[in-house]
Length: 258
Picture (cartoon, rainbow, N blue to C red):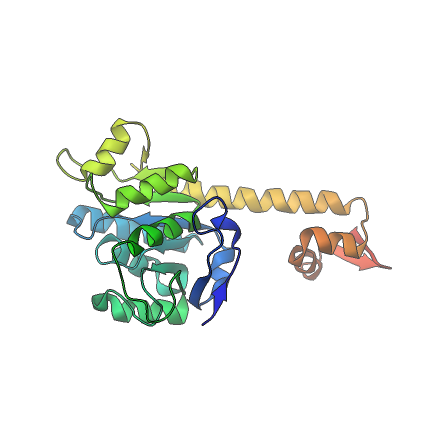
């Protein structure tokens, strides 16, 4: 089985030294990611808003991460499109659990990425789901909880997000519905997404700003005409990318601004 070791985003979690098995495109791990979790039995309102949210995030270049379960997880994966989603499994990668999502999981394997902490042949157990939730949260920059009861796996995901210092967002709900997310809002432990377009633009804007910061840092570095070895050691593939784009040139073993 193919696996990954020592993934940076697992630092300071119980999974730090674990092997992570995978099927699919590892390039998705290099992109910005948002985790979406929620109830297996959400309202139609929560389903519709989650679909809209995940779809818009994917169109903005954000990878959607979820746990492959029925309900909110499946909605998020489908809305993002298999090529823009990462599923975290609670079984070995040969199981495709739950069976009702088999077709969806197979499509994500082919076009997206499926991850698991468990070897092939390992079936789901109750204690697997908290581990899956921890990995799901660890992958995303932020956690979005679409719908959650007070005592639920989604609220366990919230606890992982708090420990990992991740910002938590929720959809607003009526009284008597999604009491877990309403409690988070009341305790000021989460922010509500009142405008999906505004939220997605904010996330995408942060992405553009982050790219601009890296570009400025790299070009400022190149003003001092570093050696090719210095630039490659510090910036790796960015050097090759900018050379192809014509932003820098390499002469006599040194890097110059174009």
